[in-house]
Structure formats: structure tokens, C-alpha cells
Length: 345
Image 1 (cartoon, helix red, strand yellow):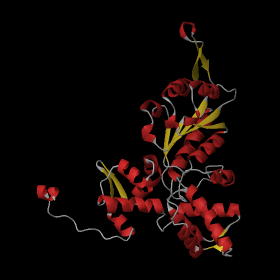
Image 2 (image 1 turned 60 degrees about the horizontal axis):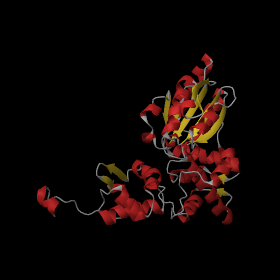
Image 3 (image 1 turned 135 degrees about the vertical axis):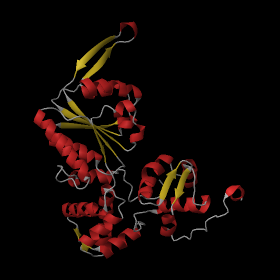
């Protein structure tokens, strides 16, 4: 991407380095997503009382909301060892079979971006999920021999940012489906305060709320902005980050009071100034902005839609009146001519 994305919810190397220290370990420590947590708490307790492994779990929602963290918490609450991997990591079915047949007691397997598993690999995963067995094929052609190998019971935890790309067959094999939504500012302020305490950063409630409001509803973005505001505060000789310090630092980063950055504002302005407010197709937007359509759909658009600045229609993307107001632009008068003459004009 051309512009630095301070609120980009995808993980970068710096996020990975701090994930271990900031990541909550239990459901009680996990902040937000309260209804989801309570449901998981019941499912986990019931499975433990029966002495069974937990049903397979699907976590879906935008990036940066804690799907990987929640998978590790679920495994820990069940007392299971967890193996972390991702859909693109599997290049052939043999790699999946090797993972499934590892000698271990009951365990959990986490597959991130599970919608990116290949079709052949999915076919090998289905019997493993349903019957805890895997089919081994030895040799090829007429000499091929098929063996069924029984597996130790396990819990598969799948995570995806594109739930719509999951095949119906795959989706139906998950007994527990959980959707993670964007966090309200009040929850993010608690997360910012907790992270600041762990990292030894001085911050008051107003400073934490200012960072929370501009974090696009995403804990990963909130923690990243906290670290950058700390840098500004340190250079300016400020020991405790307050609202004024946070506002000054975030403004210098180009993050406005709604959490929009340069690319978000360019996206909205392009629809307004070049396409009359829309509708416009995603392909046109991708070419005009020089950004991949996946980036626009996965990173830019979800928060703009949630914020009421953008809407997707059957004809394409359209900005809402709130976008004009936010960008300080004056909306043109409505066309009241109507009918065929209005369309021709």
C-alpha cells in the first residue's frame, strides 16, 4: 500500500513481537465480545463436564479483533495443547495428514484464513472433523492402497475474515460459529489502559479514550496507536498521555477523529469528486486508487460502512451524506426532474 496504515488491522512484525506480552490468557482477561464469551464459557464447561473435546469452532470477522487470541484461550480453558497454522501454509494433502496424525493426546488445531484451504485438502479434512479418521493412500495407480487411520479426538478452530468464501460443506462441519464484531470505544479504552500498564506507559482515562475513538473498533490498531503516541509523548517530555497529547500525536500521524487515514479519505473523495457520489464498482476504485481490490474490501470498506460513510448496493459503492459532512464538502442539490428526462440529462 502506498500510504502508511497506522490503523491497518493486519498484523505486522512489531505487532507479533508484542503479542505475547499483551495477549490475554483467559476468558476473564479477554475484554469485549461479551455475548460471544459467555456462550463459549457455557460450551467449554459443558464439554469438560462430559469429558469430551469441544465441538469444532469457527471464528469469523474483520482482521485484528482477536480471533487468534481467542483460539488460544479456548484451547487453554479446555486444557488442550494447540497447534497454530494457516490455510495458505498447506500446499498438499500430505502436510495436512502429517499434522492430523501427530502423536499427541487430545488437542486443538487452529487454522487461520481457513477459507484459503485448497479443495483437495478440504476433502481430506471432512472425515477428520466428522469421524476423527483420515484416509492414507499408499502408492499410485493400480497399486494404490487405501487405509483408514483413526485419530485422537481434537477440536479444530478455524478463523476467517471472509466467511462468505467458505464452502457450505466446510461451514456445516463447525458445531460452534462465532462472529467477532468491531469493539465500542469504551471497551477499547479498557484495552488501551491495560496495554499501557503492561508496557509501563503513563496514560489517563481521557488519553485512553482519545486513542480508542480513533482505533476503528480494532484492538490491534489501538495498541499500535498507543505505541506511536508514546513516542511523541516521550520526545515532547510528557510523562502521562492525556487527551491533548493523544490528539496531537494522532493528528500528526494523519488519523482523524473518526479513525480515518489518508487512503480512507482519498477513497471517499474519489467517489464524490470523480463519480458524483456513486454508485461505482470496486474495480474502478481499485484502478483509480492504485490499490488491490482485496485491500479495499477487507481493510478500508468495512469500517467506512460501519461508520455510516459508505454503503454497498447492487450497482456499486455509494457515499452517504455523512461522508460529505466529514470531508467538509457541500452536497449538490438533489435532482428533482425525475422520469426519463431526468435520466437523459
